[in-house]
Image (cartoon, rainbow, N blue to C red):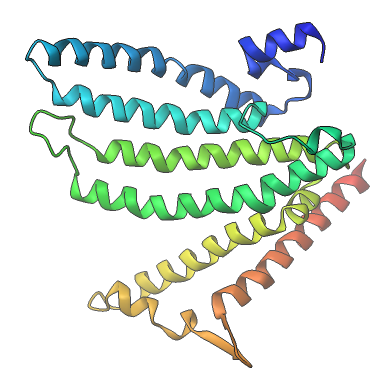
Length: 267
């Protein structure tokens, strides 16, 4: 690495390799640079609370504010680390691999391991956030920061932000191996693609049933309807929603392939 690149990497990793960044990468860097200002505010909040507490004027809302700022800044920082490859790595073997092998490992790690986990986190925290909004959740302390639901909504949105960062980085790495046409993006990221489509299929079916069944039918009863059952194949039990998801995923990839073929034919 050139000395100039090393200085850039230390001072502003977001500027390193800017020439190969796509719009998704630059959007992540821009948002992350703006969110970085939360850290100076966090430092002021911590110092102020230390002084006030030692003077006998403890402010519970400052304690809550510290958690709010730290949580939001760290989650945004994860997306920034993905885009700039500035996260902690163990590169004992990786450094000696060829560039092509490194790229394949990056792609595998991003969309076969990391992105499915982030999609799962988003799915879990969306219910977490919605229930908090409905309950108008606040601080446990009368003097604390209320509207705690706002932080939980930010948490859920942050996982979507990280997901965008992962996908943008994935497309950038895929571009090193092949033209990143849409169908190739979806195919090479098959676990992530299928996981995301599974959420769309599941929630589409669930909400369709919720809106078309009598109001006295509970949410739990909807979840026990036949469509959410399982198909027994020997000792295996495959949920019907997974079967539907598999078919829809293949159709989506095939549709993307046809769209890309038509675009190529026009030019």
